[in-house]
Amino acid sequence: MQRHIILSGFMGSGKSTVGRILSRRLSLPFHDVDDVIEKQTGMKIMDIFSQHSEAYFRELETRVLRDILATPPSVIATGGGTLMEPENLTLSKQQGVLFYLSASAKTLHERVRHSQHRPLVKKHSSLEAFARLLEARIPFYKKCDYIIDADNMSPDEVATYIQEILTP
Image 1 (cartoon, rainbow, N blue to C red):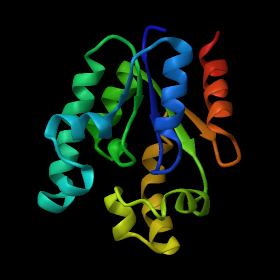
Image 2 (cartoon, rainbow, N blue to C red; image 1 turned 135 degrees about the vertical axis):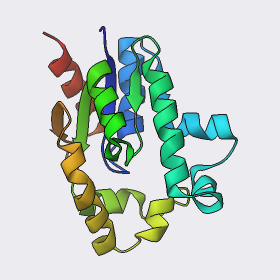
Image 3 (spheres, rainbow, N blue to C red; image 1 turned 90 degrees about the horizontal axis):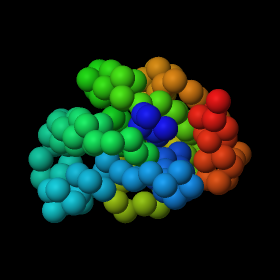
């Protein structure tokens, strides 16, 4: 594998879980962009949003993604809004193979609705508001190289499917 494997999708789509599985199976480093931001800033994502702003967080996200993409090939789990920034989409497509882990708003909402560490869950707590946020992001996700309907797949199944795609 000469390029990064980049996992994108809405919160709750399984990016981090699938990323860890792929990392282990392929013996590649794993980077979760949100985790790297938290480690570098010493702050939780929720606190960055509340003490600074979403725009500030997005700037950090772009910088961290750029730094990760400059390293040898790895598996990367992006944040749910990472691809909304054109630079992030361009860099990701240039440096890696980009996968969108798709799932229905209902499934995603069910997975994350009780999460205390996701700032946008708090802001978009109803299923309707959550679905509107997802719909706004889908056009960006659809620019990925591959779209995987992960709604009824386990993380292991998603990882296996990605491996099959990557194997010539």
